Each structure stands twice: as C-alpha cells, then as structure tokens.
Amino acid sequence: MSSDSVGLLSSPEQSSSPSLLDQNIDDYATTTQIFDDYTGLNFQQPRSPSKRQLTIEESLITTNDPKRLCNSNLREQTDLNLISSTSLHTPLSSANSIDSLSIPSSPTTPPLSTDVLNWLATFLGMSNEDRSRATEALIRTCSTNTLQLNHIKNQIEPYFQRDFVRDLPRELALHVLKYLPASDVARASRTCRAWYETCNDILLWKRLCQTKIIPLKQSPTIFDDIIENSWKRSYACHKHLEYTWQHEKPLPAPLIFRGHEDFVITCLQFDGKRIVSGSDDNSLKIWSVATGQCEQTLVGHNGGVWCSEMTDDLIVSGSTDRTIRVWNIETGTCQHVLYGHTSTVRCLALHGDIVVSGSRDATVRVWNIRTGERLHMLSGHTAAVRCVCYNGKYVVSGAYDHTIRVWLPDEERCVHTLEGHTNRVYSLVFDGRHIVSGSLDCMIRVWDVEQGTCIHQLTGHLSLTSGMQLRGNILVSGNADSTVKIWNIDSGKCLHTLAGRNKHASAVTWVQVVLNYVVSSGDDGMVKLWDLETGDFIRNLVKLESTGNGGENCFYFKGKERFTSIG
Image (cartoon, rainbow, N blue to C red; front, side, top):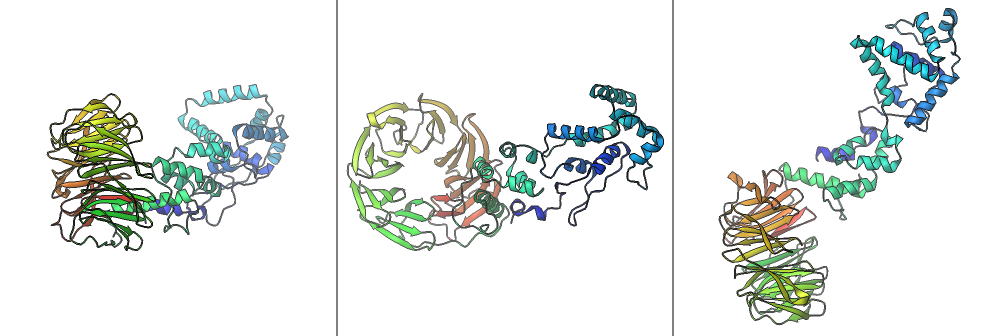
C-alpha cells in the first residue's frame, strides 16, 4: 500500500504531531503568563500521556476558553478584560509588588526584580495611547541590540498565530483547504480531532477528486471497511492503483476469453461489466467481465463484422454484408437491420440514439437506432470513408480520397472540405473544436472545425498513424514506426517521444490516456505503461505468449483497473 494511502487512513490518535487541544487556565495562570513573556518562563501545561509537552508558543496559541472562540477581535477583547481586571493600576511598593505578583519559580531563571514589577504595574495603568508610545520607545531603545529585538519578535509572534480551521467558519476553512493537494489535506487531518472532522468533509474530497479527474467508485474496494467518505475512498483506490502500477507490483491474473476460434477479432467494446467482441466469423459475442463467460452470441450478419458501438442496452454493428444491425444487449435479439450502404460498412460513431456510419461506397449515413430509420445521407467523398466522428452537431469524416469533410447532418450539407494530406486518411479525433487527422503520408494535422483551416502540421512519425487520443490540448499518437508521441496541439510541438530501449518492437496499434498515464499496445504482443507528463517508461502490463498473429489490436480501460486486449 502506498504511503499516501496510509496517510489517508490515519486518524488523529495515530499521529505523533502535537495536538492543539482546548485548555482552561485560571486568572492566576493568565496573569503569570503575561510576566512569563518578559522572563522567558514556561508555564507548565498538563501533559497528555501520548503527546509531547507544548512549548510556550503553542501554549499561547491554545490559551482560550473551552469553545475556542478565537478570532482576532475576541482575543484582543479577552486580553483587555484580563488587564482591566488586574488590580495593578498604580505603581506598587516593593514589598506589595513581590507579594501580589509572585510568579512560579524556576531553577534557571531568577525572579523579576522589584524595579521591573513596578515598571510593569505602571505600564498596565497607562492609557492605550501611552502604551503604544511606551512600546515604540522600548523598541527604539533595543534597536541597537539584535538579540533583544529577536527576543521581542519571538515573544510577539505567537499572538498572531491563528488556527484558521477552527477560527474561520467551516465554509471558509473548506474553501482554503481545497487549494491544498490531497496528500497535504490527508496529513492535516492528523493534527487533531477538529481538523480530522473538517478535512474529512465529503464535498472537499469530491472537489479534490474532480481536480484529478477521479470518478466516484461505486464497486466494492479494499478500503470499504476503513474509509467512510466515499470520495476519499475513491482517491485512496486511485493512489493504491498508481502505487501498484509504478512499483512493479504483481497484477491480478488475467481472465482469458476464448471464442471466435481461429478468426480475427476486428473490434471491441467495453463498459466495465461487459465486453463485446466482433469478428470476421460474421458474429459478435458478449462476455461477462465478472465470470469470463460468454453470455450471448449475436448471429445474423452474412459477412465479417468490422465495427461496433454500444450503449447501456443496445449494440450496433457494421459488416461487410453492407448492413448495420442493432441488437438488444440483454436478450441478444436483433431489433433492426439498417439497409442502404452498397459496400462494406467500415466505421461507426454513436451519439445518444444517433449512429453515423461510413462505408466503402464513399457515403456517410445517419440513423436512429431506436426506430431503425435512416435520417440523412451525406455524399461528397470520392473514395472509401475510413473514419467518422459525431458530437451531436457536426459529422466529421475521413476518406481514402485524402480529404476530411465537415458536415451539418440536419441540412445534409458539407460546410468544410479539409485538404492537405497527400495520402489516405486513416484516423480522426474530434473534441468539438479541434479535428486531428492521421494519414498514410506520415503527417498529423490539426484543424479548426469552425474556420475549416489547418492550425498545425505535426511531423515526426515515419509511417501510418493508427491510433490517437486527445485530452484537452494534449494529443497522444501511436504509429506503425513503433513509437508513441505526445504533442501539444496549441503550440504544435512534440513534448515526448516514447521510444528508447523499452519501445515496442513493431507497429503500435492503439493508444489510450488513463489518468496521468499513456497505455500503448503493439503488434509485438505487448501492452506498455508510460508516464504522460515525463514520457518515462514505467512497466509492461501484458506480454502475450505468442505474438505471431498481430499482437494487440485494441484495448479499453474502464474504472482504471481493467483492460482487455485482442490478438
């Protein structure tokens, strides 16, 4: 278990740091503490059997009423009340001063002299204006002596220290804490019980998780009996997973799903509970992740299945038989057969209840998967459509005619034809603002979808870019030249090339960004883990026993713990 995870599990009783507990002291102790400021005497606080004794600075911080009502105004008012309640309003005689202002004796510090006690009594009897002037005069008198100034500074500083978690309203304290890293919040929770309760606020940990793009974990975890806060538990699982990945900890034994015999698996979908595999044996299979068993075999296509998409209850598949089929994921029955394409359906893009299909007949078609109705046909490409994207507004298609087209499907109108590639376009990613295209010409181009202009041309790869993923302004590309590159699409610069002695031995077939990691698969039968920020190689996740059949073609992560690969 990682050190950060251990920190998350710690309670205030397990901390070795001093606890800022509320303490009560009587008027006598408070009065003598005022004089201790001048003599350096430490007022002895009760010691906890499991804590070290508080220093004078810590004692000053914790000296207050049991309800801990300590903001600056209340503290100043308390000090004024203590002073006004003191009977020392006029200078006293030597005998009376010593008797009435006696302080705890110390073996190392002599008692205050009569002159000092009388001076203090005179000071306490002054008005606020005279006290200020007297203090200024005292500081100016000590200005030539650095040791005296340091002593005054050390005595004054504790009065300006505040326990903001207790002093501020809870909402403001949480607002301050949310700017700390989660590891620091976990450490702060070990200070005392009050800090522990505040630092365990569920909304605070929700914000911390959202900052790191950590989803709420619904499935059972190893921390269920230890951490009650569901968002804090999700963060602990995240840190534990990172530790396992980064420190070469053994991974769970893989589940092997055997099916499709010796046919090629061409497409894969994964939702965390089920895996859907399509093959050129004309069928699809639905697998249970929990049991590893095949739940359904979907039979109906008359040609190989080349692409698929899935929702919570439906599966959509495209085939070389020129049809698209919509299947019920629970019963395995075919609900709709979508006819219209005149050649192989090569790619699909799903958004809500609308699926967009691209075909070797050079057309793009839009369908409603609930009703089976064809909504639109988009014509314009002069060669096979290899990849499509759809975000609910724009359809983007890439084809073997070297172009990318941007469509408004409701109007069946092409708004931009993006020209620049000199060979077939094989891959696209689209985030609603940027289009990134990969081609057989070894180039990756970044386009503005609204203007229809090329923003950057990313050069560096030596072959076909087969897989890309875009997260924010960071693009990860996998190429047949056996390398993975990380780019900043705002600047057009290559940040890292994932190569070296740990690179893939053959073509990279797929890449995916998971948390702060890049996961890549290749024809060499390897799945590798890399650091997204530094580009450093971390470990091999999978190594197939036999790599003669093409290695891993694609994989998906869901919930960060599980992945699937196909050979």
